[in-house]
Image 1 (cartoon, rainbow, N blue to C red):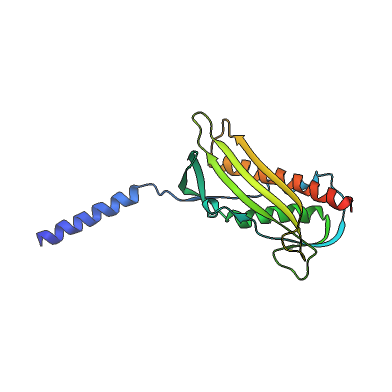
Image 2 (tube, helix red, strand yellow):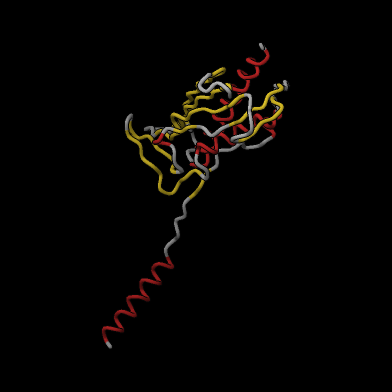
Length: 204
């Protein structure tokens, strides 16, 4: 009887203590345009009569996951436990590139993924997507490669852009700010790539 009473009291104590603890939930962050209206300000107004697929970007294995990476040393990475990408970068970056090209309508037909008999393919690589720990201010490091390829000729790259960008986070060092800076870098790099693609077709 005494043993039963002790176990009951222990169970009640554990229940009360667990209810009093604040639940720590994981937070998820988006790689996305802050506002679709940002694309409307772009000056590109050409429309090329081609069918284009925008494929997923290939991501370096260290960053090909939802956990957000923190570089603490030149060859050392740590991963946040409570901070994740809402969507894996391979898909999220492809979605953003698609949104930009689709809103500007510089091609007759744009597909996200596979379509029947496209003329060209837009894809790329993500070599780095990380928060870099600094003694005073953390940094954001994104290294992207964009490619326009001819669909019927695998491996033939017509336009290539290598964007390796590092930015200081300054005063606001929150994870939400980190995700916003990542999104800005991808957006700006996508615009630079779209400029190069447009110039390529203008010269045809």
